[in-house]
Amino acid sequence: MMNCSDPAGRIHTEVLEGGPRRVVFFHGLMGRGKNFTTIARGLQETTTSLLVDLPNHGASCWTENFDYIHMADLVAAELRRDFCQDEPAVVLGHSMGGKVAMLLALRHPELIAGLIIEDISPVNSSASEFEHLLGTLLKLDLSQITSRRDAHAKLKTDIDDAGVRSFLLQNLIRDDHDGFRWQPNLQMLYDNLPTVVDFPAVEQTYDDHPVLWVKGSESDYINDEASVAMRELFPVTRKIQIRNAGHWVHSEQPKLFTETINYYIAGRYDA
Image (cartoon, rainbow, N blue to C red; front, top):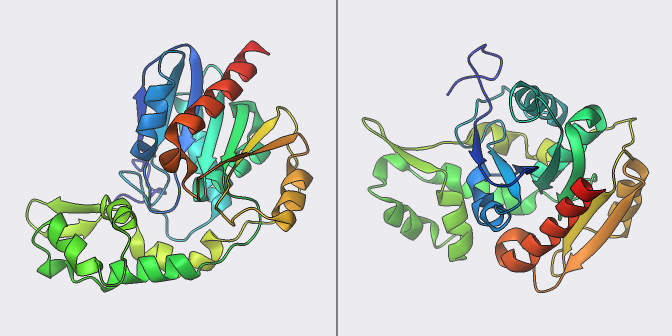
């Protein structure tokens, strides 16, 4: 995979054409831009969406180490080159992508017409779940995999949730000659999990536009400590909670999530 330091290394993006409003989507760990396709299609009548594969994920370039500030700067360069060349956009980030979105707003506010953070905060969270999931993927002997269904079966003992397995196995791709491989920079992400679940020290604050902070009612990623930290960096923050949703609000409650996002985006463009 191309390194992001290479002149040819790029952040992969996909545009879903729609109305004149504009929104950029950042996925979470082991995700990809296409994870937000359903939400983007729900906004399509009024909004053009950019689905981003963050560095080390999907079809985007890789980095040597995990660094949120570097990731935000790489994404900023890509947005300036194309989607936000002429005007800023509303930026939405989930989990890891939410932390990238926060740093993008803090470091490159001129690119931001509005900010939506989905079920994450600028504090350290536990890495134990991801240590188990990514560690399980790394133990899988890809030379013995004959199909994605076969991979599902081999992972079932250690990852019993079929939805989680499907989410992770979207990253398993087949090469013409070498069989299956992981498309993300899996070993690097696993080795850097303490940094992935942390948030870098920053001095900037962002109050150019109100920030919409979306929490899943069944998720424990946002607590009182997180609320204090969030409002220190983003003083103009409105937190809302979507019922019957865990950490992946956009996939567990897509209709309510889309309605919420559409209302916020409309407010940013009609303000």
